[in-house]
Amino acid sequence: MKTALLHKTGFTVLLLCLCTSCSKLLDETPKSAVTENFYNTPAEVEAAVNAIFTPLRSTNMSVYEATLECQSDYANGRGSWAPLHEFQGLNDANITRVSGLWNAFYLAIRNANLVTGNAPNGNAISKTDADRFIAEAKFMRAFCYFQLVRNWGGVPLRTEENIKQVDLKKSTAEEVYNFILSDLDAAETSLPEKPSSVGRPSKWAAKTLLADVYLQLGKYAEARDKADEVIKSNQFSMVPITSKSDFQNKVAGPELLSTSEEIFYLKYMRQAGQGNYMLWITNHPNTKLFNFGGSYVLYGDETSEFFSSWDSNDLRKALWDKLDIGLGAHTLISSRYTDTKAASKEGAGNDDPVYSYADALLIYAEASCRAGNAPTAAGMEALNQVRRRAYGKAPGMPSETDLQLADYNAATFTGRVLQERAYEFQISGKRWLDLKRSGTAKAVILAATGKTIAEKHYLWPIPLSEMNYNKALDPAKDQNPGY
Image 1 (cartoon, helix red, strand yellow):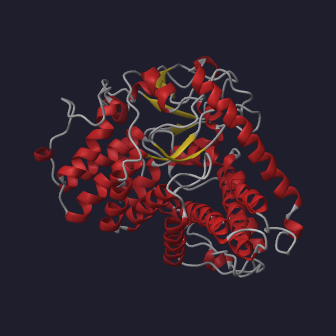
Image 2 (cartoon, helix red, strand yellow):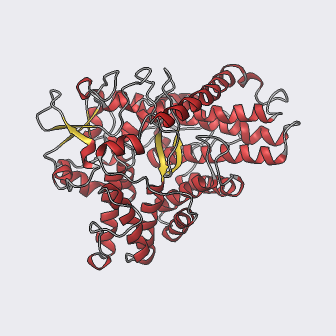
């Protein structure tokens, strides 16, 4: 623990420098960012790449993930977030909330466009350095568009080519996905095998994101193969655990610099305004797991089918604590993330595991089955690696907890993988998106809550600010249905 703390302290110094340069770039350079006065040296271009992360590393990514979690079958929302769990569309408070997320993703895209458009013309930077920075920018741009298209559908496709164009029509979802794939193909080619520094994307991050995009598009053979490349790289492994505490500290702990399963994480530190905001969202003052209390936005119910059917020997189930906080005696509060030494309510040290090795394993398991319309031995092994760790077993060794291939067909296996993803990626904003892409949202939500999802609920509304700003959009034709 002492070593980890020292490493985190060193990382804090590095990230403070990164954040300082991000802030300086955002405050001072936009007025000259497209002139010859910037993007000339490696340090200048690196600062510009850092600025891509700033809109996401603030509270926005945590708010985004919590917004998605409120629409899952296992987590309800409290207060202004509660209407999300009614599945009848977004009310005014949540329309305002997702409008802020839209702005954050587009600000990150704008900053990426400045890099991709200007770095090739730098007069004091090598082509090798420029290509790497451009690849990092394209990875992040693709990541942001992936969030936009899954939640809003077709959106304006802003690139370095039209960066000065205010009025821009909405591209189709297919056009957005094609752009995402183009960016990721370029990123995969030019990114290094090891991140250039902590928190930066690598070649393996690009392959994992590509696999996720292919899975979303139903290109299952491609998703399988990209995930398999990550698995066969032997660069990653599941962190072994034997207790709930191990998961909290060795997998998701606030003092970790990195782990063997990290593929692409948003990095945080114990610094006011530079930490993970999710701990404030998920905790209650009585949990005693976060020294700034918490707003307990998300909560579960131990009597629900999701929790009552969950094997109690699975250590991940223990990451929900029973706590009466005025919402009933069976209320559950997530204890996945803990930090009792945070610097502020926005200052917890826990990183956000955007893509871990479990993502690669479970994408491979699902895609390999869907590609051949039958579960495979390799896919079952990938699934079992994730399960073994959850039961406190060695991830790479056969265990009595293993599921058996002969017991599953294509439908039951893919259902089992989706359930495993729900357990593994709790509080990561992935469950609602999984239910939508798999076509199971209507049935799962009805069974879990008795509620029928309104058609308009599947997409978020394009912000009024965008409609007013972008005259190429027609509110009558371009707004998502129901809004």
